[in-house]
Image (cartoon, rainbow, N blue to C red; front, top):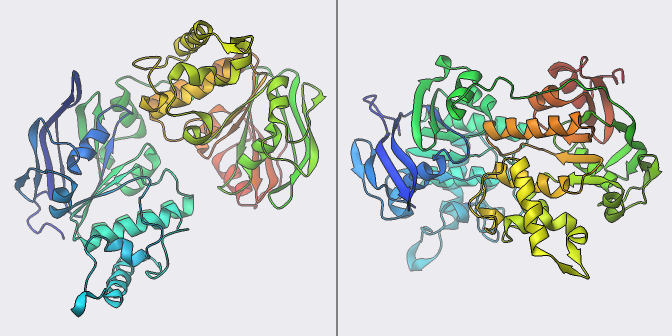
Length: 505
């Protein structure tokens, strides 16, 4: 699969693509070589997805060329791109759940024996060989239904190799993976590179880029900013290139003096999920819940808000005990919850932006049971201004917004209720570095104004950069409680692994 002469496997030459009056990609060029993982970076809207769709044969360039092994290509559709040796591994694979793993690998080109009988043994044998090459243990005969996202991605990678793909494009492949699954994916990428393939890797997580890639190409506003080897750049260089300015503080943090206790949780338990959790959040502070995936952080937040019933313990907001499993009562008392999955749980994707912002405030916006459109628009416009929302039309569907702007809509929906406590689960997951800084700025302003914030985050830099106190969970128990001064990466990770005694409060 490699390139013996050292010539690039794939070249993007002066590619331009516009949609109406919007120039999505303008004169972008870069090269991919066999045996390298090459990161394509940029904020949401920088043009990365348009590049991927041109490589996939979904879009055709208005000008410029996609060149594979020295030959310019014209892709009439995705099949042409696959035939040229380009495979796309998307963040959310689309397998046929009722087919076996092997059948998914060979779907559309199932091998046949005499009499048009399906060569199942041949598919299983070939699939087993590919998984052995990748260094992973996956049963080709099991149905695809029930596979983890990580294993589904491995099936897609195996499918690409069965097609003799020379170039694999991985679009945000780690967004839904655990740390262990990410490590395994990196091992697979290293195996692909040793086999001579070129990997184009797209991720918002810069630590992953430094861990797995040899070169980076950075885009901004549809244009190429620079291509460099990984040892020529720092995180700060990449951020500056992506956003076009120095990010003096990715984690803006105003020093505040915590005031009265807003949230007081004692002995909170949910049978089989978490046990005996105590926590307090004061006005003017951010308390972070840290821990590994599956530690019970989100489940604690859901029980505090009343979405899930607790089996023991008390939840008090401003001294008043809240009833068990009653989120409406929690909202009425001054609590708000921004969920981790904003698309499924925080927004109605087909509804307009302004109606999404108004969703949690319908009682206040209605008169005799009718929602007043003028109030709805006024409320949404005010929060769009305050949160610096970037949008086309306020009446356009919220699905048209970038991930970062969707997160701002969910924030606006809850902030419009003027809550005393904001619970926010993974506040910056899946959004670009520039918008992360904006979300952090918003949280800092809210806390400086006296709000109490309970933040759940899997990103240690975010926890260390924004939290005044850090509570660490391991297997449903609090194993660490650190002040901002005490918290560091090592102590948090030891507590998350259950290796550390609880620190000082």
